[in-house]
Amino acid sequence: MLPNDTIIALATPSGMGAIAVIRISGPKAIALASDHFTAANHKKLETQKSHTIHLGHIVDGNNILDEVLVSVFKNPRSYTGEDVVEISCHGSTYIQQQVVQLFLRKGCRAATAGEFTMRAFLNGKMDLSQAEAVADLIASDSRAAHDIAMRQMRGGFSNQIQELRQELLNFASLIELELDFSGEDVEFADRTQFNQLLQRITQVLKNLIDSFALGNVIKNGIPVAIVGEPNVGKSTLLNALLNEERAIVSDIPGTTRDTVEDQIAIDGINFRFIDTAGLRETTDKVEQIGIARALEKITQAQLVMYLFEAGQDKDREIKALQQKYPDKSILLVANKVDAVPQSRRTTLKQRYNDLVLMAAKNGEGLETLRTTLLARSQAGAMGQNDTIVSNNRHYDALLKALEAIQKVKEGMDTELPSDLMAIDIREALMHLGEITGAVSTDDLLGNIFSNFCIGK
Image (tube, rainbow, N blue to C red; front, top):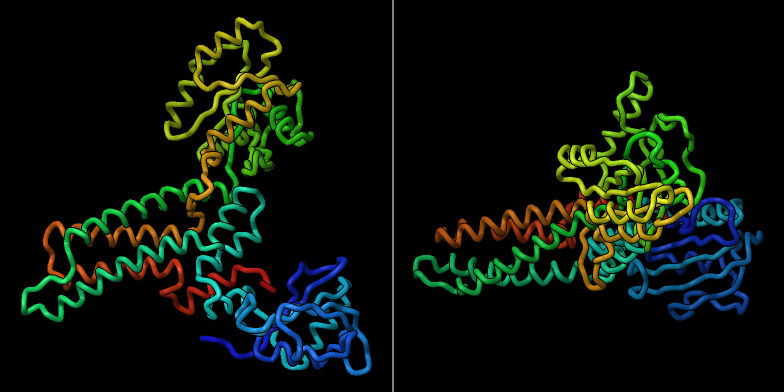
């Protein structure tokens, strides 16, 4: 599976910029670069130490293409585990094309999506879950998503899975050994210790599976639907949260007839706010479509903010919403508190738990709302050493591994023959191995790395 050709790709975004980085990896990387690089100190790249940078020119015959900096990384001390050269040139698209085309003519092949990282995996520089974390790190657009990707890339999740798999593999080996002595009625695997291991693995797998709900919303942003009757200030609230005039605000009921969405980060967590049409009975067909979409967004949202005017009693509407969506986290927000006396504020706080009092028009209560949203998302509770699963493939493999472990546990309890129990243990080992790449196929690797950007 290990390729033996030399690949090249632009490692920085395409287009014009101050500089561009062109990456070459493979057995001929340094030799090819040396053939077309004239160093300012007149030394050949092959004679230079690894992890050094050299000033000079990229030349095509007698034609100087650009003045560049060339970084040399010799195997195995490189990102891919192969010889790697990175050329930092000026960011002209013409220069980029000329340099890349030069090396393509001289024996390089254009790298496919994620091929540098795939080579790093195949050369043992990282396991599969760490390689996937590279893509997540590149795509991270919030502090929390960045933290999750960094922890996974540094191997915290991988180590946890590998330790569990190794312990299970040790017991599996003893059970397989028993099969070789089946006629002598001997037990090499201590069933009490094995049962304790299964219980511990079950708990760890359940914790990791449960963390996916949090990891998924952190990775993709937490959708928050802003709902309520017309003219309670939903669009004003959205504008206040975004600190810009994103939604049209008007005193005319039914102004918002479609959903308006935008995203902001609160303390490193991405929230995707959805302003919806006011909920009311109407004969306007266009407004009815908007209301139907508002109800649809409620079902899709992770959090629901229900706005009502502080001066109005909405017990019936609130109760109906809570009964209709019992599984939703509904945050009550009393808006326009600047128009009611202090006694009314006190009454509202006594009537509803975890109520946010706001005056969206002047920003009163906005910081309290942000704090409450963060607490409701549970993302703020993420500890520094927590392992959070955010990858769908890992989640699926964990579910299948847990199912296999539970079958092994049932086999233990019912004194299932060792040969049948060994089948379920092998299945659990396979699913755990799929996470780190200890068990992989060409199709799986192709699917994973095809989602990477070119040059990584």
